[in-house]
Image (cartoon, rainbow, N blue to C red; front, side, top):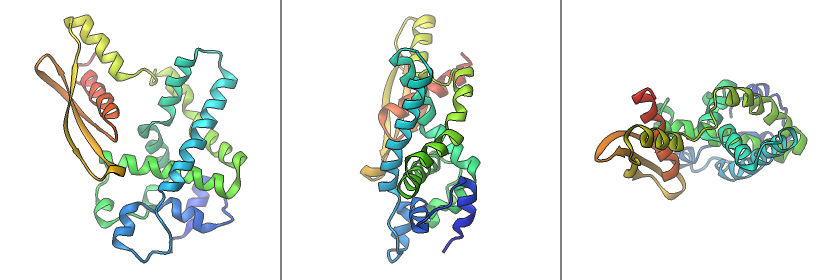
Amino acid sequence: MREVELVEQALGVIFHNKDTLRQALVHRSYLNEHPDFSLGHNERLEFLGDAVLELVVTEYLFAHYENPEGELTNWRAALVNADMLSLVCQRLGIEEELYLSKGESKEKNSKARYYILANAFEALIGAIYLDQGWESAKDFIMRTVMIELPRVLDEQLYIDPKSRFQELVQEKQGITPTYKVLNEEGPDHEKLFEVGVYIGKEFIAKGTGTSKHEAQIEAAKKAIEQNKW
C-alpha cells in the first residue's frame, strides 16, 4: 500500500479513513490490471467533488462580487476547468501517487493525463468532503483553487477562446469559423474528441477534449496562438 502520509501532507488534511483518500487516487485503468485490488476507482468521488467544488466557487463569487451572472459564470468556468485543476494537482505533487495502469503511467504530458489529474483533484475534494465535512473541503478549495482568481482576472483567462476567435475572424476576414469532428475514441465514460477549426475550407488548428465543445475551445485557443492574434 502506498504511503498516504505524503499525500496528506501535500493536501494539508489528515484523514480519519485512509482508504477514502486512497480511493480518490485510483484510476479505472489500474483496476483493469489489478482486478483483486481492495478499493474501487475514483469516479464516484469525482462526481461528488465536482459538485462541492462548483458550489464553493459559486458561493465565493456570489458573496464577493456584484458582477452580472454571465461574467461570474465565465470566471467560475476558468477556475474549475480541466487545465486549471490539472495544474493545481501537479503543483500539489499528487501525480506520482496515482494508481494508474502501466500504459497510463507512461503517458505523461498528454491531454489524457491532464484529464486524469483534473478528475483526481475533484475526487480528492470529494474524499475530503466525505471524510472531513464541508468546512474542511471549503478550506482546501480556497487554499488551492480560489487563490488562482487574481491571475484569472488579470490575464483574462475567463474569456472563451471560441468566442474570441470568432470575433477576430469576423473582424479580419468577414466570415465565421467552422468546426469539424476529426476523431473520437475511448469508452463512453472517458471519450476524447478531436476537433478541427476551419476558416472557409482552410484548416487552422485542432484541439482535443472530453466533449465536442471542450475540443472546439481548445482548437480555437491554438488557432489564436498560431495566428498570434
